Length: 452
Image 1: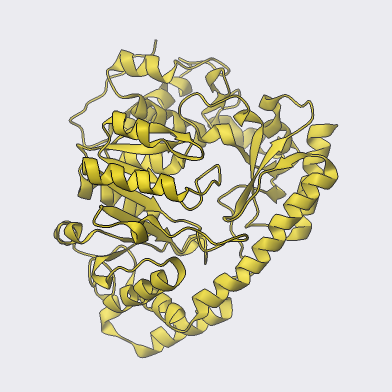
Image 2: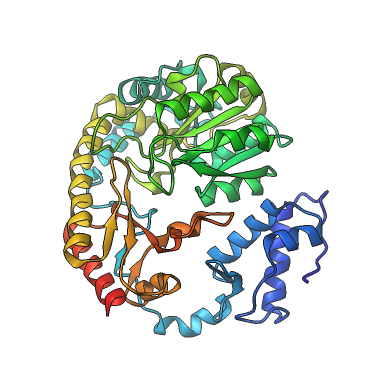
């Protein structure tokens, strides 16, 4: 069993301490390439820390190429470690088709309009843009965002409750400090692994809660003792399921009866292809504390690092007391304000919804024609789920795809606990980063890799 010294009083989080210790142990040869790592539960008990801390450290080891997760087998040290990647780089197949969920569309970004608005902001030469400004963000921009939320999501909140941040990660970290690290944060399982890691890195304790009919299991939420719950109700990540009205009511009732805080991430709700979406939880709340979060990373571009949240009124004074400045530069805030006020954002969203609808159709059509498997119905969002057919072993799906130049992830990659059988054969196909022709070529590459 691995033994390392962890200091809970250190300014460095336990997650970071454990990650560095494990990485050093692997780098020094104490744990050999191909060797199985201790289970999360075993290591947590041995070191007297939470399984969430171990899960987050293992997640970093995986994302940085030190370890790999093998379904129904455990965590293993990679055969080829990051230090050896520079030597072997020429042997690796370059990514030609990117089906990852983090890919973005750069071809349709409104460069000319954005550049013109930036020049306008520069020509105004406002000295206020060079100052730290309001800690929640410029009041004029928050006014525009409030109007946008009413029009697009039916969420009616005053601008005084809106907070701007340089990415969802910044806002989640701020919420941990605002709500309190003493609370247990429930997260969906499977769910957005990046947010899990941010919560743990920010000092929070997390409780993975399984899904029930595609939404967080509220009965398990009651028994978990959690004081906050991070959810993606409009388009659950990664399953893509939309929370029903009954499930939303049960979740709001949990918040009302327990005093829990709901963190609602509405990350790609703007793109809907079938039917009418349910209102946001914040729009349905009647005094229950719901923090509504959204980002411009999906609607515009991830590189802009622009996100926002709407706090319950009672949390606003505490937020202002804890923050002296907004993390988004004033120059970018004013450009975004002009972009929303001029109607450019909503026109861009409408245009991209047509583009993405065509790409989703290309995935559905290509998967059927090539006999890759069954694509689950996708009413919204920017990724589809494909249950892969054929006889290729589940553990070989991702490696064979990578060897063919295709980047993708599997549903089981996003779970903490043991998933139901079948999740290892479901892959996520993000379609934001490729056009229809590229999607068709990428699916053909998968056909050759999996069905040969």
